[in-house]
Length: 158
Image: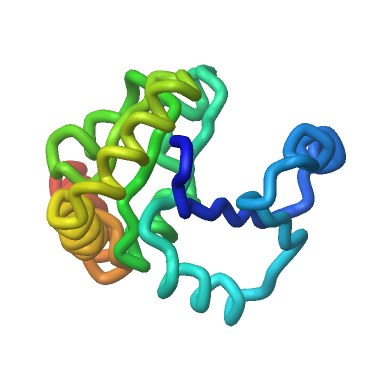
């Protein structure tokens, strides 16, 4: 991604924060915010295009989408996922709301470069992302599904 104007904003304060800050020390396009509040999160969601989901290939991450991708989708961000299997991977594939970079920095850079040149594809991913959130993860949908499930479970017991 030579000559790219991509900027990376890394939020949070995990145990490897210092390590990653040292790794990125010479890069002017990476900014570490530390812990941020909900208002700052909302602001970042409004200005960002892609949410990074760099998960380790453990069953917990593969089988559970987690809260960050849902947060990204609620803000209409496309998702860049490190995993190449699992529930979130399948959602991204089916609903075309992001991509997997198979834990390859080179593939991530290539995808980001392609999306920077094809804004229409990126905008489609972003629109698909918010629609996917509304259809699969919005609280009203989830609670209605849970309620229906519980009602059917209770009915089958009688």
